[in-house]
Length: 168
Image 1 (cartoon, rainbow, N blue to C red):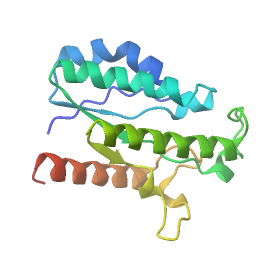
Image 2: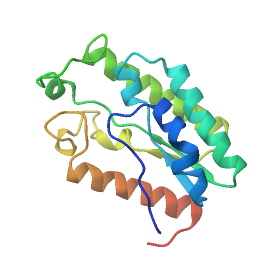
Image 3: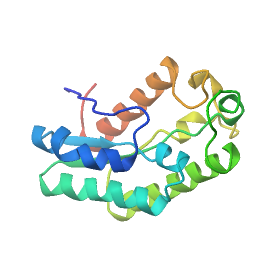
Image 4: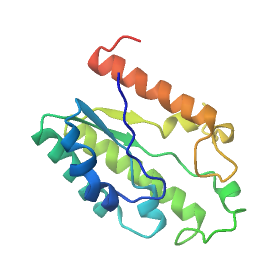
């Protein structure tokens, strides 16, 4: 599989949508993985706008014969993120994590209702008892480290193998 990553750290789904035609549609890939929304929530953008932006990219992809795959964002390691020198998200980290969880539920329902493939990066960040796997995060508490990225890759490969019968 040839993979091209056009993600930009710190971007919002509005930015993704604005770049979608140039960076995705013109290349005519077989499929596109859409992962976004965390930065939107950080800046106070409502989940309905996030869903509208992602849904627009889904519809455009389908129109051009590209299979859209919705991906669920990672949670935040709030205790670690709160130690960082940046301005915290609107409402604080506990509210932010609640918003991420609500977005995960919204995107899961959307994908299920529209029969879209879904990669669940969110649940893979939790232990069996529900505790956050902090060993998967960078020291900033927001981004996956090497182990976290490996876990995300394994999760994506499993979905692709199961849904599209890829061998690996």
